[in-house]
Length: 311
Image 1: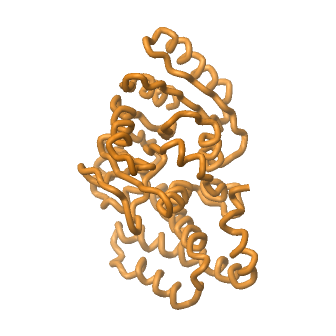
Image 2: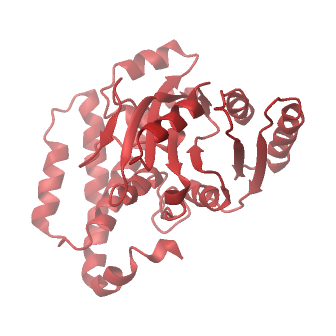
Image 3: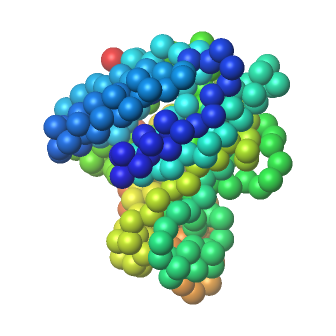
């Protein structure tokens, strides 16, 4: 999968007088295989009229949030475009992103469209039947055909599969490594994408540009309901953690818990709404831990909780 992703990046159209630096952060179990792929592409790259620069870094820490932070530290370009090894970027990916930054001087973060890519027609039909809020489980992000500034509360979080950031801005950001890290104290699969966006939206301008798009390759194991239910269960826990982290100054009380839980549980119990029910149950079961923690260690968390992950 990595080789296909890097090959698609290798074939992107490059704006004039723009130098492309490809940074690979490797957390895989097969380091030798990854290095061989990168070295092979380096040799092919020498024949290009405008050579690309490849930088390879090994990160033995487990958790995608560590890889994201490593990428922020190692990147030196004016703009940072991020994607994952299971993505195929469009040929105009870089050009459309750079053009958007130049035409929108206030933009500091630009997020693009993510479409599903799979050989399974059955999976595509399944995805097409889902409403936009449920497509999140497949990292699909599509806010329409028009570009605009993203403001206010975010229902669908943009994903690192397709995101561009100005250098002057991304050097200020660190992702909380308790998200996207099943070995952390929180033991959550994801959450690093919304954690980044929640930080960003407080002091930066986020724009959506549908012309900057990538295809997300979906594995067949994600076709089954077992994966879907598990991912939404995990999402419920991640959502609770995000609300706890970013609402520390607000009191955690029974009224707020009941109100939030009701919003998730008020739907009819059909297939689509089973997902909301599972999400809600996960959310509710996670709350008591943070409720008691916030009472016992309120003073400690108020001073150190937000900044702890920046160490």
